[in-house]
Every structure is written in structure tokens, then in C-alpha cells.
Amino acid sequence: QVQLVQSGAEVPKPGASVKVSCKASGFTFTSFYLHWVRQGPGQGLEWMGIINPNGGSTSYAQRLQGRLSLTRDTSTDTVYMELSSLTSEDTAVYYCARVRPYSGGAFDVWGQGTVVTVSS
Amino acid sequence: DIQMTQSPSTLSASVGDRVTITCRASQSVSGRLAWYQQIPGKAPKLLIHEASSLESGVPSRFRGSGSGTEFTLTISNLQPDDFATYFCQQYNGYFPWTFGQGTKVEIK
Image (cartoon, rainbow over all chains, first blue to last red; front, side):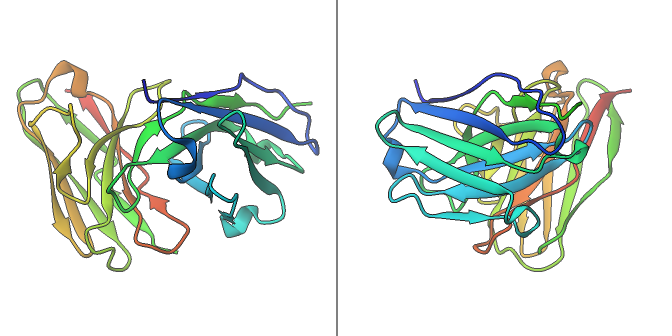
């Protein structure tokens, strides 16, 4: 079935980087833009960035520019989110999500979420 | 950035009630708006896209309406599974796409 499966929880130290993977299955990987969204503890949803698996072009939220990198591996149908120079404010659940076919941008398939806890 | 403001932040209701959640955009997003339901510990679930189109498999008691800057999500005949947090999201072309802060529907 159509799904996105993310890697497991991470506990990076302040100042370090974290890399989370999101493996797609059940659909043509290069046909759908994939986004990353995060949710801080008890907080709302924050859009982080987008990657086009067909070619690898990206766009990032301005507040994360310089710290966020989205990449993809078409041989394994996997996208990666790497966030550097972590602080406690980056503690959140990180989701990858697919844009629904024939929609301007609604997310119809989400990964299960990856908990990232920045702690020394 | 387009700001999305939901109201109310919390809503208390009973099974069988009809509830309405409002989402206002700081500028027009045309009909490029989605609604999601989120249960604690789970990823959001798409309910409505393009402001009023019901996602496949979502019960018809969920209805979305509106365009431009004002949108509503109405849930009729509230069921026990509907007690959750609801978010709106705009995707009107330019990034960043933004979400409302959420509306928690709790049991009265």
C-alpha cells in the first residue's frame, strides 16, 4: 500500500546535526513532491521544506535556511532531512508527507513521525 | 508569510452535536485550503482538500466550505472518534505553506 516509513527516534546533542530518512513505497517515487513538517511539544504544525524527487530541487522555510538540507536517493526511494546546529527549539516530531494527486498541496500520505529530542 | 488563524482554540461538545471551526487567512488563498484531524501521538489525517472536497474514506459528516480568506469545517452528528485536534493548512502557491494553530474538540 501507499506509505512513507520514517527512521527511528534520535537524541542529538545541542550543536550537533540529525538526519532522518523517509522511505516511500506503493507509488512512483519520482512523481510526487515530498514535504517535511515538524511539530514541537504541544505545538502546531510548521512547514519546513520541499523536495522534488525527480531532479532533487528543493525549497526551504526561510527561518531554516542554512541549517536544513533535503536530499533523495532514487535507488532506494528514500528522502532525507538533515538539520544542523541543533538547539532545544528543534525538539519536535518530524514528519514527511506527500502531496495528494490532483491537489494543489494537501498532504494525503504522512510518515509515522520521528521524535527528535535535542538534549545534552 | 500568510498567517492562518483558527477559532476557537478549544471547543467542548457532546456526541451527536454539530460543531463548526473557522479558519481565517491573512490574505486570499483562493480555494487552496485543507483540513486535517490529529489524534495524540499520530500523524495528521487529511479530511478536506481544495476547501470543500471530501477525501476518500472520510465520513460525509465532515464538510468544508469557504474561499478567499474565510473557511469553515463543520462536523455533524459528532462521534466519539471525532474528539481530536483539527488543523487548517493553506497551500496557495508560494512557500511557506502555513497551518492554523489548531482547534481541540473535547468532550463536554
